[in-house]
Image 1 (cartoon, rainbow, N blue to C red):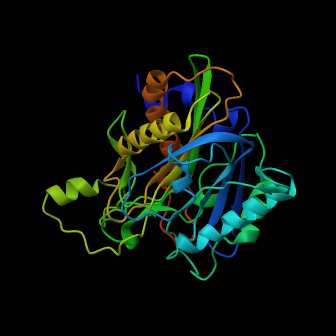
Image 2 (tube, helix red, strand yellow):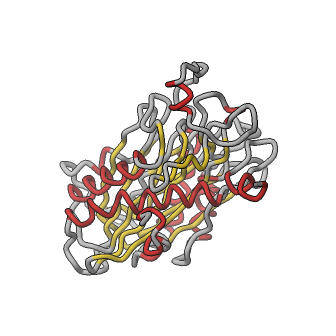
Length: 333
């Protein structure tokens, strides 16, 4: 049985009580942002594995630091410029009275991570504060759209042999109910590496073969002696969130975020490269009222994240003149 295609992983991160998701998709060029709202507050952790991250408010997630809850996580395109969208999320939350009480003031805590999508279209257009606010306005507990929307709009994968041979990435989600708790994932896949199905070892989306345009393994090509061109640092990045309704501490959330990276490693090759800023957040709303079993969560989290990665590229749509998505290749075959 292919566990990564198991029907039990067919849900969405919004299956987790207390979690809402909203996309903002820019219409002027392929970019956007996605907000994961937990307005009432959630314990949180983060694990950064890539060598070129773009993040905000990650230091406060260290278990040794005093802030105990966050109110949203933002995933955004636009590289470092896209971090500005987090200001719009904070403003939306403040207007509704969400945040840490500091005297008469409410200060929303909004960690964020960005991916690099500037080469796709006019790089001067990127998510800003208004985009983050709009994503919050669109947020709901319904299952979010997947593919070329929100933070996944301008995502690409398979860039080791250059952008001209890459394919479209996207954003995906999945969830599972196990051991009395719900665990969900959402991820924007914008990797240097190729995305493959670990159940079948098939490359779904990645470096295209110059001869026929079909996806192939860049790693296999390198092992055959092909030499990839030089890539500029920080030109990719996969970013995502795991969320559960279990009761977890910040330290446990940090461990859960680390388990999410195992899901990236099972579906993206190569992963955590010098050119990626791969970052995974973990949220625990505690709404289920049950203490989290970290062994159980550690077993399931990589599979939920892996399923979300596969869903992201399967739903991706090519946006001319950007590279095609896997869905176009499936339709054409």
